[in-house]
Image (cartoon, rainbow, N blue to C red; front, side):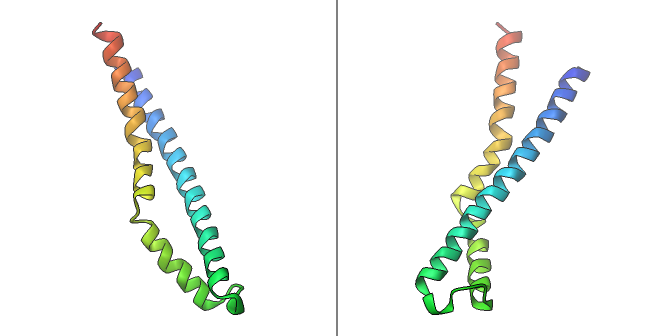
Length: 93
């Protein structure tokens, strides 16, 4: 039983690290795309201005509510379901 809890603990740690890395990566991709959108829409105001930072900040708060950012939570669900399925299959067959 202790080995099972150790497995769950290490699985949660690995999932958390993977989730954080994916979140940082997806947010950086979205931020770069928003900066490109700002530069295309406002060629005279290109660069790191206050209006651009405000636009990116506003859009990033909206990005946190999108389906793509919410699907990241599957990082926690799918491996746990797989482990439970494997345990069930091995022990009760």
